[in-house]
Figure 1 (cartoon, rainbow, N blue to C red):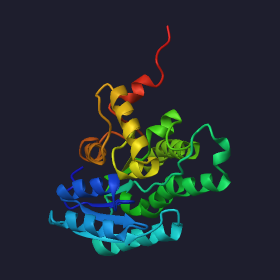
Figure 2: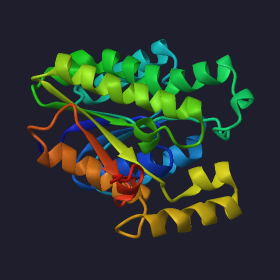
Figure 3: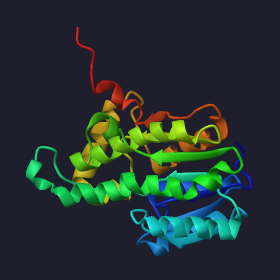
Figure 4: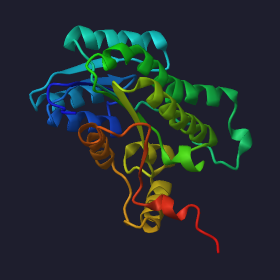
Length: 260
């Protein structure tokens, strides 16, 4: 698939991974929808960066946990661009809670995380299904996490929501083909403000060093490196669907050592 003159919705793209994806796609000639729920200033900055590459950028406020807002964003995209070729379900949230603290999470925490991390991608897929199928070469990328594979991460609720997203990715890949490919990417530790804000500077820096030391490539993901993988799936993965791509410098290789 070629990105030039195509149209991508990137949810949660006012900062971090979503912003890096939108900027990279725009660099390759793709018109982008910059979605945000709170950070309007960041969304406008990302849109301006994208437009420097000669593409159009639509800035749209929507909470993907709300089905009506998902449908409205898709309709606004079609009104402006007339098509949707790519959907990147990147919007996500978490609740930081040590896995040992089972009393630290309640029912509402799970519901809140699933609403954005799992139900949101489903609602966005459903809302954009017809448009994605229309040209026979649509693509959906679900932003999951190594947490969903290994049961680690910021909280058990977060890991569970991302694990569910991975299962849903495989289900959707079956039903959306052959017109639409559906894949998931699983970053490990991602350098940047999102984790730094959640963990605090000291813990963030400690965990970053540990993650880099544990990875065979001695490095961890950045928003830009995740965006590079997403780009590769779009322009170089025409026969790839239902797959999960891990982006962690190989750190997952040490999670379950072979016992002799």
